[in-house]
Structure formats: structure tokens, C-alpha cells
Image 1 (cartoon, rainbow, N blue to C red):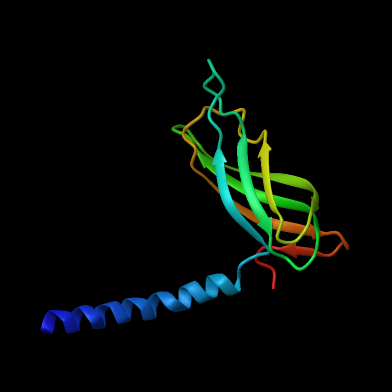
Image 2: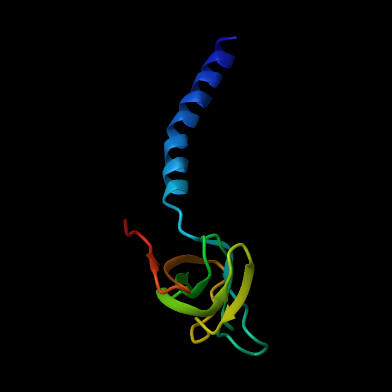
Length: 133
């Protein structure tokens, strides 16, 4: 009985501690939701990565024209941080699947990469910048 009460109290404390973090992340979330981000495997007989795949959705209220992504990748030698720009017409809520030649010049070290949208330029010329208030 005492174990159950302590377990319930512990779970409640953990949830109370996590809830503000989850809310602050959601409140500060940008207009681009990234569903997948990974470095693609080398082509036959190559050790070099064959590019970067980013799948995302524009959750913003209007059409985007330019989206800049920061992409972090690490192989056994180096940690890289590069930017790539996707130009086009990206309507709200339409899934986008794009492959970029980003990181096709480095030795492949696995698929794991971290992507985030850092700049969105809307069709009307206004901008969203990550971290700007």
C-alpha cells in the first residue's frame, strides 16, 4: 500500500515537472513541423553520404516561399552544422518531401541528423525567424 502511494506521488511529481517544459516547447514551436530528417545512404561503391532527406509540413497560416533549415550531422570524424534553403510554394498543411544534396561531400556515418527550421519567408514577404519574439 505504501509503495503504491509513493509510486503515485512520484508519478505526479514527475508529470508536474514535465508539463511546464512541454507547454513551453509547444508555445515556442515554429510554423514548420519536421516529420523526418536523415542523411541518405551512400550510392554503390561510395563512402560519401548521398544527401539529406527532410520531410515537413507548413503549419503556418499562409503560404511559404523560402524555408531555411539548420541541419546538424555527425560522422566518426566531425560534427557538422550547415544550412539548406528550400525554395518553392509551400501551402499550409501540405506535406513536403524533399531530398537535398546537403552532406553528399562527407563520409557517411549513419542516418541520424537533427533538423530545425530557422527562417521562413512567406509569400507576402513577411518573415518568421527562430528565436525572435
